[in-house]
Image (tube, rainbow over all chains, first blue to last red; front, side, top):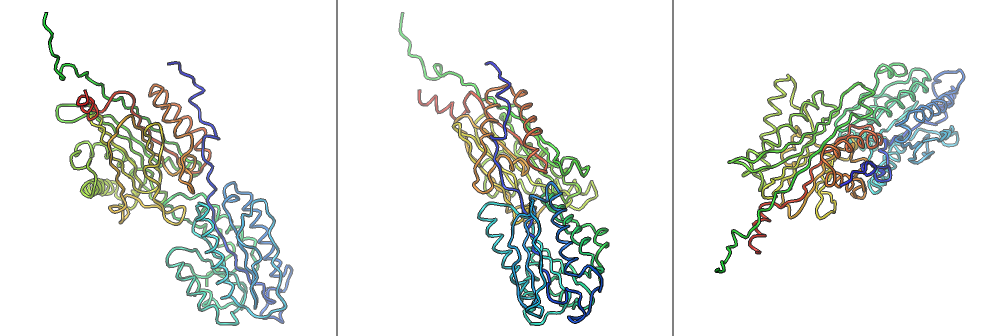
Length: 245
Length: 282
């Protein structure tokens, strides 16, 4: 038989293209009037520029930028944003953020209050729907992240049930939860009730940029992890923006 | 001159046994290259020659050490090196498959892993690894395949490829079962059969499956059939080189994971069982 070396080559079209594995990340962000930094709405975080809400949005922009600069994470990150005050708004449902600019989280001045529990419940619902979408489309995904950020105390009781649901998921290793308190007006015990595995941290000042840089690197690490590998978050980077009470 | 009736025995031609071609390759994934880790996939293949007591046979094996396991490669390497001999020396227990075979194989390999862990002064979980294997009896065509964890086993019969064993994964992308897992004894899947004509098997790790196996549909890439044809139509060395080149230059580029693959393809001849059937038909 004559051997034809050209027969001994595989081409890209001979392979199967599977969708990239995703990391679902839901950001639950406080946009209540106190995030304006105005003393009338509770203890001020800082009475300097930028306002807390602006620092948050700048941090979010940094997050998108860092994710898009990472060769793997830009195809993996799947992000939803839920903003809350007394009411809850899904600013962005889960979507890939490759080549996207972040939406702006606006202050909610019309409805006072802090319905943290309603926001977390909404986020958990969005996560479940997204996982169902992934399963039916045959898309692999890593353990989702839920990032909860608030600068105040809940003004209703919805957090009790929401904390029960999120804790159950965390205990079953179905969800990684990162609760973050901003400023001095936060009830860290209530924040802790959402996350039995990871205690809440307090943001140092308005270091949202550093927080989101850390988050993007954690997601990048996760998106390159292999079966059986535990995801290690960079504690040295964590210390740049977080204080643990 | 008289006419002699020739007996069936003297008329029956001796049929050659099939040739078995084997090949395997493993490539370090991009994430391990950048972190300075070596490849944690292990592959092995071997032919067993016939002797007075034992038939001729061959096996292929592949194992993927767990990312979190400091000695995952040691576990993988031990499993692929041991499984073939274990089956060959205990064919009577193993080749019929079933619960007895599963218990036997699991306990034997588990014991070996425990011993190796002790030697390395690590807990057993540090040697976590998946395992895929196929053993084929060249005399009678009986085979046994086994699988724990992710990765895929492919079978080729009558020129057609099919998934013999799909991945066993958890909900999340980095979850699977390993040989060191507490549930390993019940999650070790065994498949037995008898080859009726030329037969081929392919083992692939999770990284390779990213390019050769559709996660949603369960379909196989056209490349699978092409690789089997290489081993059918070309000398083993040439086909093996092509396999290694393809893994390195194409398949490994589509993932960050380690990639490994092992092939077994029979050509020509007949298995003894079929040869005897052929005789009866004459």
